[in-house]
Length: 396
Figure (cartoon, rainbow, N blue to C red):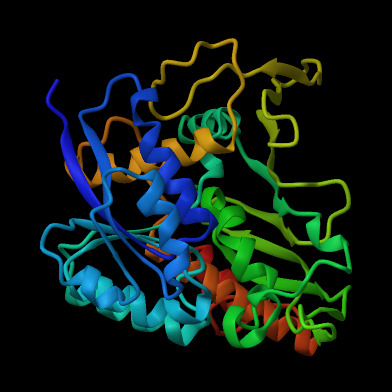
């Protein structure tokens, strides 16, 4: 089978850039795809960061500290960009204008204004494929829940809960980093950092928040600055967003939570959907276990626990008795991006990467959440009167 090679440049050679390189190196793990990424150039403002790629990724033929040099290279088809949030607007816009297909990290801009700039640039270049990184829906349990939603198995939705929880920031001795500073991370705090992962599936299912009441929390006020002193932590550690979803045929509550201080949770992503005909819950805390409760009128209400085998969007050489992990979800996400890039409207399976439009929806929600925290009120998402928005959602 002849494979189409997609030549990638990487801008931002930190942890996630290395994860992408590792995924590309494991491409033989996928059982039957006719496309593959090849990382040919890397860029980071810190020259030392590119050395890891030069030593370990044989396909890399160019390293640079100026991303414009990378974008000027006609031998590069697409770019993966993983840089702090305050750099998104300029870099993403330049990547798109250069005609390079883009998989960028969330949240697609430090704030709503920055996101608007990115979206405007996309309108100038509709030929460029732009997607947002979000790996967790490719876990087998989450992937199966997505199929159940598409098949309409849940009946009428009663409530939804989704979240992404970390625990490493519980340690007050953890040195401060750019995610704790408004200038580099933005006012969204943990929402901008984690929120797209939480919203990826709900938005894909069409469950857009109509209004939000936000509870935002700062727990650790300062951290070591690496110079013998301390520095203030300016951004939100935890966020709980109580939303309502209004659709023509139903209205239900949806609770979204993003936490960087969640004791006992190293890297937990979860989704829980309660419906009149089926309820289901999946969490990466127990990555092989999928809980479900089918229900028919007059029948028993009994939860079932299923050990989900290694199955996701793209078949792999791994047998069904082995566990699926985070590195596998990254590989699957990259396969989806490359699949869509090469086939566009004829992907091998239905789960494509998070879209810029979904990222823009997340900005509208997070902006409303900040206002809710400031005022202590429930705030409509996207502006307008809450009752008016609800009426429009019902088709009134």
